[in-house]
Image (cartoon, rainbow, N blue to C red):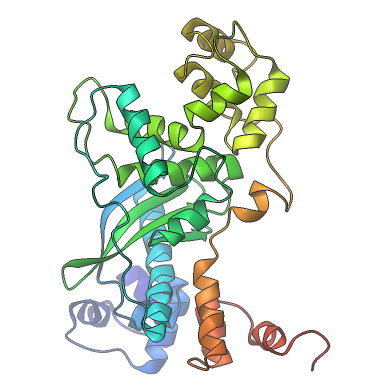
Length: 343
């Protein structure tokens, strides 16, 4: 509090900040602006009450992540979700139906059982066995808030529930804008798995390992992969693995693992690959998906921005409010309202 007080202009005491936090005193408008600048957050973040608490926080992070990094990530998430839930409230959008009803489980007997749960979810959502064009769009369609932002470097993403009045009002998955397309899709599928398999109920199967298995099975269904790669191979070439990773939108390492999981490659073949030519694949993605086409073009959250533009079109918010919600210059918003060639 003393450190924050020293950075705020106009000056404010640590005791005053303590009273703001406990609700014993309200800051003036000038102090609110000073606090927002010092904390690098929006006024909406400080003043809105859409997000009372983030519950069940699950970070996807590298070792060495600091408490400060986690706190900054949480602040970024709250800021985004405050704006997201605000626009839903303006539009009168009620919570979606429970897309996971009847699909959740708290025990799995084996890896094959995990694959079956992934297939059941695909069947329930009528997805077939083809590659999923956009995990972001799919999860947004199923009522999950997907956010992409500039998270601290060592944090690739997180998932949480939003509480208000002690009750859950939204599920959210947040991904870093530094994450490559392959890893982003896998992270989203991993977090989706947490909403289906609540517990393995099996000491022999670790929960995070089960989530990774589910993610691979959901993104790369066995039936589909067998048709494209053929059964019981002694080996696959580098060219084939790269081709398949681009077909399904997963990393080369994830594709190699999946080839072993469905029985196309023998376990010893997969182990040998990871000790030789695929040794660096977990740290450096070979021939990554890039550009503005295919998965790279589709794998971005769109719903929040679409809702803001819908609210502008329905004249429920002003261009100034839209610029605040989208964190974009007002001039850019006005140009997109009027179209090209207008002043």
